[in-house]
Image 1 (cartoon, rainbow, N blue to C red):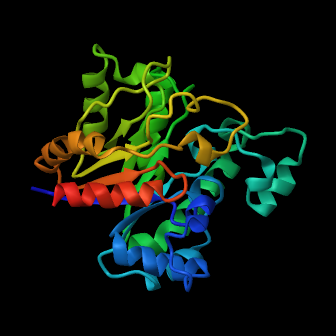
Image 2 (cartoon, helix red, strand yellow):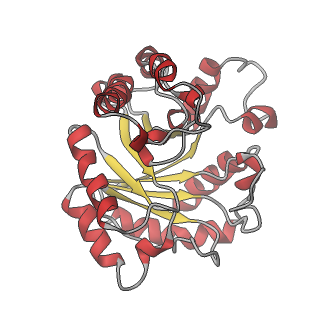
Length: 293
């Protein structure tokens, strides 16, 4: 049986910091990471979605966490076909593209600039990788990333850009997991050693991805987004409001046997609570750890 490791996404999320979960003495990001690492052994880095990580920051994370601590990192938005405001680009690239467009897409860049973004993204995470503390890079694709030849080619190219890193794939488009397509998709991921990210998210929407439990690599992963169906696709609200959902104990209890099934096929399984509103994620991660024990 592989080890099941509960944790959360983003230990610096503002509403979590304000919730009172951290002790009053934890006044800095360093203090909070050190405290968090006494409670959980994994965390997902959300900030890498918004900006390329500075290698020195990664080195500090290595120094401030125990030997067995693991960071999963979300892939930079530009590398997952999300729109990226020029302000979030590296300075030299930002000056190059200017502000003519409100958002830049990866396809808008020239070949050398694309290569540069990949190189910088990889270099930012290298200290975690070298220390054995990088779990996987999570590529969360948008709902307009459809099961088409171009999408498969894009995923195939990930191994070329990240040859030594573990890669996890999360779809936000339910058409990837239709009954007639899912086995083909899972086989595609398994053949390339990519982790399929199992999701627990609001159902009943056109893009909803069903909670298909599957293991396609030595690392299994489940991301818990909550069931706030009303806010899941709402525009103009904060990320915290989108994921504002506190799991009931019986909901998490239903996931315990599924996680154990995954652990029977994987070296380890990361159960990441992404219901990042106030202290909901840490409370539910602790609940899940207790249920699994």
